[in-house]
Amino acid sequence: MKASARARKPATLRQQVILAVDIGGSHVKIRTSSGSEERKAVSGSDMGPAEMMTKLATLTEGLHFDVVAMGYPGPVVHNRIVLDPHNLAPGWEGFNFAKAFGKPVKIVNDALMQAIGSYEGGRMLFLGLGTGLGAAMIVDNVAQPMELAHLPYKKGKSFEAYVSDKALKKRGKKKWRKSVFDIVERLKAAMEPDYIVIGGGNVEKLDELPQGARRGDNDLAFEGGFRLWRDNAFVV
Image (cartoon, rainbow, N blue to C red; front, side, top):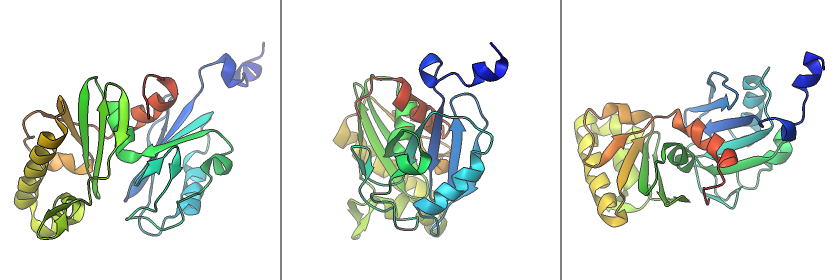
């Protein structure tokens, strides 16, 4: 068999290649399960789903993939986006990504995708410190995204208002860190996890972590995307 023919073997006869897409408030990042390097483009408040697909067309040039896993910064129910995000342009709710890609797509909340990539069994609470506050919990392989960011916290403001990237810049690192520790302790008492993983870009701003917590790695969002397709053990 010629090399070109081998390269065109159907996915059923070889390990399918997964494209993981991590959508954030500042960047959209991709990587494939075949070992490609991370590629990224600027996102932001002007990026809706159609604009993102245009960016992805450029980012995926030269890459082969069979299926897609997406981490979305907002609520997702049964593989469908149900609410537009706070930090991107509107138009996401009901957008048909499978049709846009021309390939099967699995979509979960972005915090949940990184949580799945971080999971090591038992009861795990995941918190993502980034543009906003992401949260998810996995209990014995049952994965549940949680919209905790906008719950009331202090002075009529939400958790996110105290630990978001905007809060870090406005309040300063010392006050921001104090709020992070306090919120983690409150959620720990409420959720009773075996361990906590704190991820997101701003985890780097924490010199120390709350007791019972370990540092996450943003690259594990891609691993979570791969696990969505590879590992049937997770109930999402």
